Image (tube, rainbow, N blue to C red; front, top):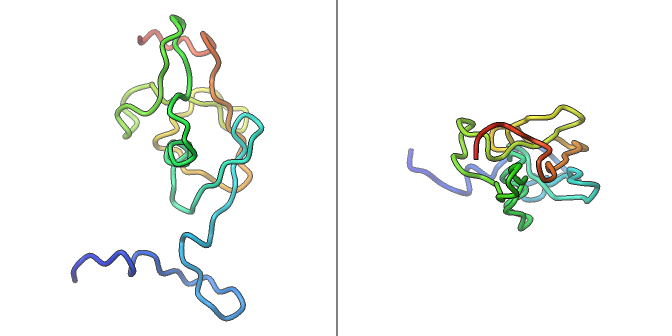
Length: 113
C-alpha cells in the first residue's frame, strides 16, 4: 500500500458520532508555566518547535541549545519534566498536563559545549 497522509490521520476516537483527526486531538503541556499545544505521538521537542521555541537551554558559557540530533544521542535538548531533570525533549513523548521546565543559564552543566 502506498503512503497516504489521510490514512495516517484516522483514529478510532469518536466525538458526537464523528471520527476525530489527530489535529482535533490536541492537548496542552505546561512549559515554564505557559500552555503549549501538543498532539498525540508528538515529542516535547516537536511541540516546542511547533510553538516557535528554538532554544531549550543555555550552556554554562551561555551558548543557546535546542534540538540538534533529534534522536537522543546528544544532550542539547535537556529539559526538566514533572520535576525530573535531564530529560531529552527529542525522545520524550508529550503527555496531557505534563509540566516542562526549560533549563536556565548554567543550570545544566553537562560538560558538553
